[in-house]
Amino acid sequence: MKRKGILLLLMVSSSLLLFGCKSETEANPVEIVSTDEIEDTNTEDTSESTTEETETNDDTAPEEGMVRSTLTNEWIDGELEDQRPIAVMYPINKVALPQYGLDNIDIFYECLEEGNMSRQLGIIKDWKNLDRIGNIRSIRDYFVYWALEWDSIIVHFGGPEIYTSDILLRADVDNLNGTGAVSMGSDYGAYFRIPEGSRSEHTAFTSGEKLLKAIDKAAFSLEYRSSYHQPDHFMFVSKNSPNTLENVEGVMDATEIDMSKCFPVTKSSLSYNAEEGVYEKFIYGNPQVDAVSGNQLKFANVIVQNTYYEQRDKNDYLYFQVHDTTRDGYYFTQGKAIHITWEKDGNNGVTSNYTPTRYYDDNGDEITLNTGKTMIFIVQDGDEIIFN
Image (cartoon, rainbow, N blue to C red):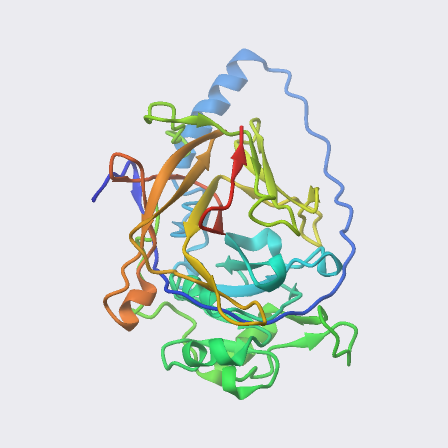
């Protein structure tokens, strides 16, 4: 299949299959007070010059030393360029909401675990200065493979040992396991509880400071590993020339995306905000927000990935086939949707775990994403996605 770029080629790595466990905490969003906008008395001339300046600046670093993020194509501090992201396992049980660190998530995955409940994996590039991240729960092995696509350091609190130990204990997989069960990796002192001393679900958290100390103690690399990092994970277009999908054959309207048939407990959904050009995330019928800022999660790109799955055992643990060349899905952006197919190489051993999942339109061209954050829903083959 051929790949069609527009302005920027950027991407990182890829996945396989597999599963984990659960946990829970509650926090109250802080009310954010915004400053009043300054009224502009210059009408025509000012608005025109502002538009020109914005368009110019999108292709020019706002400050010296800034670089494009390979996860979002947004401008970031140059010091972050080679820093590995973390991959955080977030539960989304009602009692676990809202959560900390969501504002910083660049790529967000949602997939079912047992009991029709879903769990989310947040890929966070800029994490060092976060005071609290979580709460954090157990991982499933298939989430591990999605985390590896980004050469991430995996942050989790246990998992079903029978299905996760083999992958988590591999020499190439850097993970911080908060349960103390070394059969899935050590915690290296990365976690704390709120309230302190609690051992109940949804009370485990970490911070940038804790993670830095734990990573140093574990002797994990803070910078991308050349053997595994692949910076060409996604192809992006500039904000100056957004991908509107208008000229793509088979394009459909998609201002409302209802995922409740795929995630019957959380009833995840998104609504398109045309003014900002992003999809706003909802869960349990309410905005999904960061616990500190109160900001609702927003995504420039939404991908739905139909995936082969099986129920593994009587405990309802699931298996998702991460490596495949036969499945399809949808790409949503700018209030529109197109049908896509996806593929991930599974024939190169360990290396194939890190290769990116590729997404193609019906002409066989790799899709180009708009600058901004991306939401990826991994859904069971045959589940209904409703959008209009």
